[in-house]
Image (tube, rainbow, N blue to C red; front, side):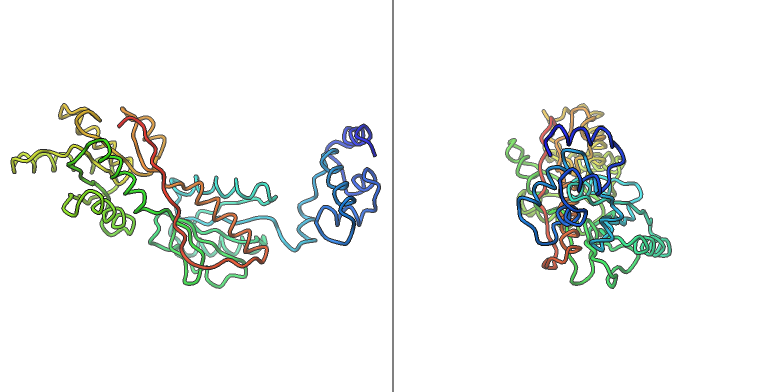
Length: 342
């Protein structure tokens, strides 16, 4: 069939094309058309290519349910999280969806807060829908979700949360991000570096602090607190007061544990009559754009590449769903420094 005929069929049957229409347009049987689309059966390469080409020309899309029945897959992946605020989950989910859309796979999100009973309800709902796999994610890399996912009949991949023994887990390389920040500050000619960060009980906090001191020097100050703007503001007051009491020079560079802390730091410095970056250079962590890009000056910060984390997790759970072998273990992905004006 020529292109004109394909176009005519597409126009006449727009929105209601069936496998019968495709078979007629390609000049093959319904069985051959189905096998050509699904990559199964024995046929010549020319026939398979012709069916697929005609399908594109007339705009034929296989029925998802029928395709699933043939392949015994639902072409859906569940994303389970206790990050109800979405700070980490939403960019990660964007990466998952980006990786899977070309494979005809959809992603649906279930937020479980920190409720084991709710988590169990969502997992059972996912299994009832016959998902091909589940990606578990959360608020921090050193805490697991409040539900055991280790013995499910579908593959589970973990991203930005603690995985079970023998699982595949993805997380950002916090040490790498801290080194990028510290090395950049030193490259700007700064020598009195300090790190203002979150609670010392967090694995990521400890990993970043260790990397910071490896670059800035073993005695470089690390000040622990919480993840708030208020803490960043208070930490500046503490550091400048201590420097004044000891007759020492105040810091000329501050590496902040997240962008919210950085915003509090910048506000405190401004109130002291100090200019960023002329007097003090600032680097944040997270690249939370609604904070970092809107600060004055716009904040130089470390991006954890959560979108890429999600992309890798999505491709991996797809590989497992298709029966491919994937080595278990923790995979750390590099961070990226986003240089702005601070």
